[in-house]
Length: 167
Image: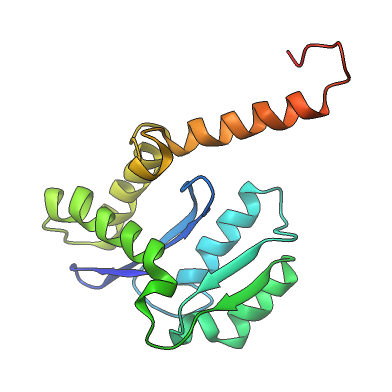
């Protein structure tokens, strides 16, 4: 989660660690657990078919991520809640990197921002770009979409009966 200087706008992202794809996000004028992070979490679940079975949801110790309403929702969706050690910035390094890149690549480049709706629309565009066009060094200069497609191709090749093409 990160703050964007407007008349109060906050942004929360849910990022897939494997592909670096942003699978859920939300812009809100409040930090309340059931609004800002939960709507991002629900977007991630919706994109996964409504469930997050077997996944680990890692977050820091901020109160909106440790609130019962939020942690109960994680469990309800089938994921396992996880938090790192208090005060250990390495536990949340990937989230901090996404937040910093978001601010550098979008927020500081196109501001000033006057209302949360401006941030929301710009964030929608940025997330699409991040997932589909932005090359990531951590992914051998591929996009998250390319990494997920390569994984899907590998998985379907492994499931194909011997002697049959997977396409």
